Image 1 (tube, rainbow, N blue to C red):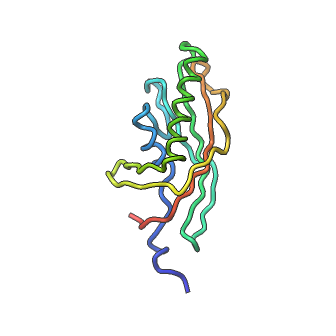
Image 2 (image 1 turned 180 degrees about the horizontal axis):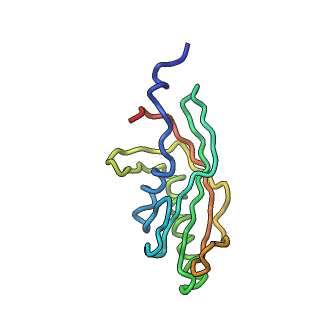
Image 3 (image 1 turned 30 degrees about the vertical axis):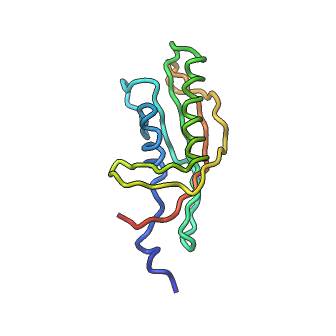
Length: 143
């Protein structure tokens, strides 16, 4: 027999969770609209799986840090380090994250799946660094 709790539960939205975590660092969202200030952070779920029987989700999140090319590679590298430090802080200390609705949540774990590095970006005026992180989440009551 299935647990009735899981029918009313789901994994947290990992993109919104990481956006809320990185927002104090710099503007962060799923998409950047032309004219949004740089530096800027993009967050995308690029993979993962869920186990409804155990109420867990393991999510692969990509974090792109964008910086104006005119500022140079050293400035972009410095912004990349700030992003990495913020993700490491979450991994090591598992701080509570305040979501946009005011609720506080946490993650089960964060590991670095791909260390941040420079990647090509479609807009040649922007330098992009990309890192990927495995995030463990538990199911929570559905809204």
